[in-house]
Length: 342
Image (tube, one colour):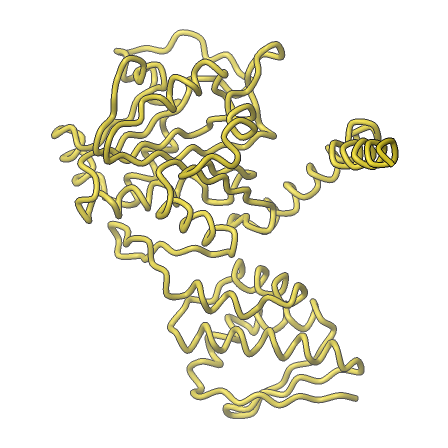
């Protein structure tokens, strides 16, 4: 039997680490096959396997470090930390604790919850154009809106412009009642929700009336030059190649663009090429343009969402024929060229 002792600075930290009904510690015990007990501020991690004890102890130490910084420890953080411990990267969690993007209308700080999200936020800060690609629940849109609100509050930009293509997700909504704004509102609802959360309804409406905030379909962007603006194109996988080129060329002086999308959820007709997929190929490596790829490990919604995304990824990979896997084909071609030259 192997045992490791860990000392906490205060009992309050242990309360945060253990969680309600010890649910956090139970997850660690189940993940690494260890047994965790405590007495006062002393924690003991025991198991038959020394590696399991080491992994469990590193997970507890990382949670204690988060608690010491006043971080809220929830189910998502524990699950993500377990994955990082398995990858030997648990120390990176504490680095994210201090990075607050902005504060919501209810006083809640918005932070990166995963390493992928942290990389995404840094890319937005450093580059004029950032493309964020990833599955549902990775915070692509929400974090982009948070960055936009932070830039607006810091007077780095004069306007926030949010847009997305008006493409129905596999349904036909038919004729909708009301004026033009009423007709496009259902397509733009996720953007409204993020702004309401950041600013609150009253502040949002005030800025909307002043023209500091604009939420509009992508078709409204044609013919415009957008200066001193933070522009977010959401659901970009549903843009055509013509729409994407049109949007990218709207960039004006003092502006920043964030493009978000999930290339596994394209709702375009089968004969249309996704403008997002094409833009990733064309713009990869261009100076001042960053392409961030978020993965299933960056999903911050319900734990089941992460498992659903992973299951679909596995299914899609199993459907690919061997000959269509690009990396293998490219490698074989290069090897043949080298052999021919020899």
